[in-house]
Image (cartoon, rainbow, N blue to C red; front, side, top):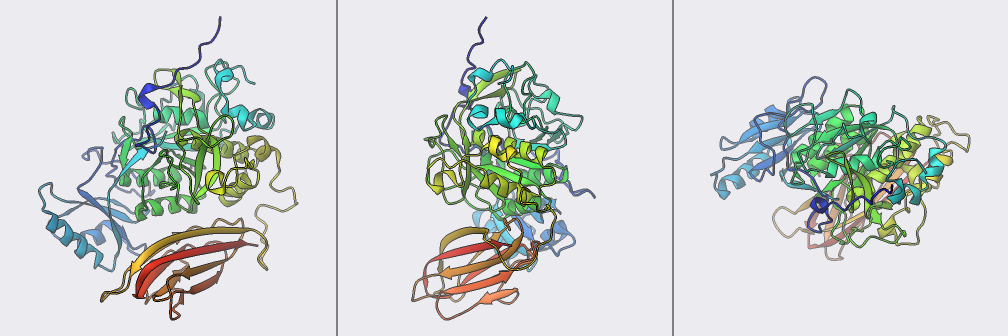
Length: 537
């Protein structure tokens, strides 16, 4: 009797229009309890929220909802607040004219307690053991899992959370990885993250990262770590920005070690940045899908500094035709026609950076199982230095294709260092760079400003140097804070305000800083380039 090749899932075939196949449109209008974990509000309907605005509230505010209400005029309501990542959701009446909405934005952004205002945009999903389907798989073999599994198949003490459509947690390939704490559901406002009928994306993603290898059933996932399901996307594969942010925060508070984000949205959003930084500050390794439209840009949240952005390669280690690329790419992983679990106790093939991201999450789980003392930054750096160079451009592969065998077999402490060893002193050779570009107009009575945030990535941060370059006929200034507060021209920790637009700031680091930047156009207009170099000890 021969085992049939699992079918391609037509309902979740690769679609260039979406970044993550199967992301649901959900909004978690939750309240924050004493634990800080967000919970869903039953009265709020899931789906895109085009009539809502997200307000970032100062971290110094004691009452996020109260500050938001004080800033909002009577034509809008505060319908949700997250006290942990400091934002509130404002809802407009469905018949509110455009001018009324503009008045609300003008009013709230003039409040000193409001750091930003942005739309509640829609986020979309981005798509030799004895297991019967193992012979049809290529990802575990391609990245050296068989060698890694000789050391560890993954520890149940390591928790991988999947923010997605929900996972069929009673699937034969997955049920052993799920304990009494299954996860949570921000769509139905309960603790049962079971997916809707036919919503296969989350179950497929979860089965790639975690799935019983060598258990005689189905396929082999990358690891046998514990699985936590956070349902924040509906059967249509879309969800609201506020839901995704709350889901990330919930996973961090629930004790996840690794969070997989096979979803994305074009653009940068402060609420998403805050959620990812919150998780990173709680020691969580975040892994995100780069996007599936083949463009030279990485979607958020993968583009966040605190997230590992993953591109997809084919079974021959060539770049997948659909994979997005860009300077934010950190690692590559197999993402074409991967076999994994789907709803109905079945198996299917799917393609996308959605599939590549959980490969990296699974390998991270194996490494953390073998070396449980690794910190988030140490784990991230270890995945980088053990990656296999495929000969692709840096914008296509980052540090290389994730390599489970090398990552598990290479002792990160082989130099005799202790993971918690404090080694102050001069900066060493470890260097991490980041860059951004934009344009500003300083010709008006009040010049424009851009703001950025940066999460430290060095194993033992030592210093960071920020440089700004722009046109000769402009005067752009640079302001920096290191405590996570919003920098302004009047409130900052460091500044560079030379005549012209060539500015530079170097800050010494202890390791707990949260870098935020402001570029302000004093005069002139044009494009600028911002570069950042972080050095470790």
